[in-house]
Length: 77
Image (cartoon, rainbow, N blue to C red; front, side, top):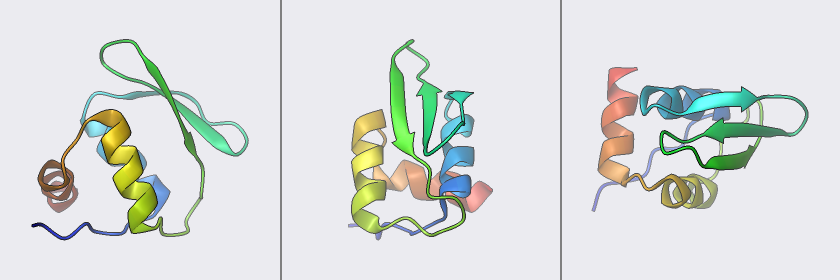
């Protein structure tokens, strides 16, 4: 099993953008992303604080990405 890497939200935002997600709103405490299939997901904004593994895993489950793909994209950034 691949270990989940902890990153700040701004890095996770870049991962989402590489996967085709479009940030439609970044005001306040939440970000809204439009998925490639048109659905909207809302994620909490934690600024430059590292996100916990549980929250990253929840976000990856919500967007349908596995840990290996996530780590592969992080390596390319």
